Image 1 (spheres, rainbow, N blue to C red):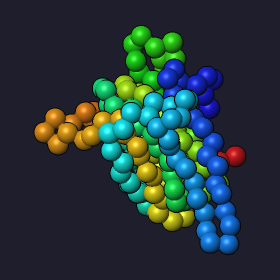
Image 2 (cartoon, rainbow, N blue to C red):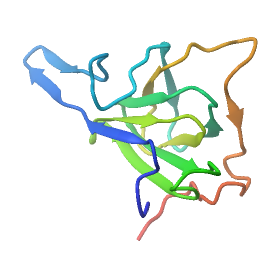
Image 3 (cartoon, rainbow, N blue to C red):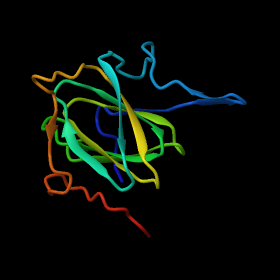
Image 4 (cartoon, rainbow, N blue to C red):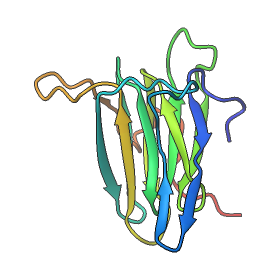
Length: 156
């Protein structure tokens, strides 16, 4: 869908190592030269089939999304006034069938939708800790039209 990657967004395919005991997948390393790996906190969030959790952005926090179970459609929108990719939308389909990390810079709107038939899990490695008294989180209605994106499945 995107004509070009949103400025500051980075992705990396993840390698899964399997043997008779199970799987191991590194998500993010402090010595990763391609990503902003300043550590704030790690949390997981889930979505049930067909559920959309969007839109929001952070003023100073960078997020790193990895879908560890199921499949998620992660969508980003660049509304930054001074960005060379202002108005661009990026879609990433991440999870069981496409393990990857998506780095989302500050001020880029983002959200996700569970596109599988069971609950999907996203692990987020953030550069800042959540400040309960003064959250760095700003929201927009996912279906309100402020962001030019339709969360419905595109058949055809």
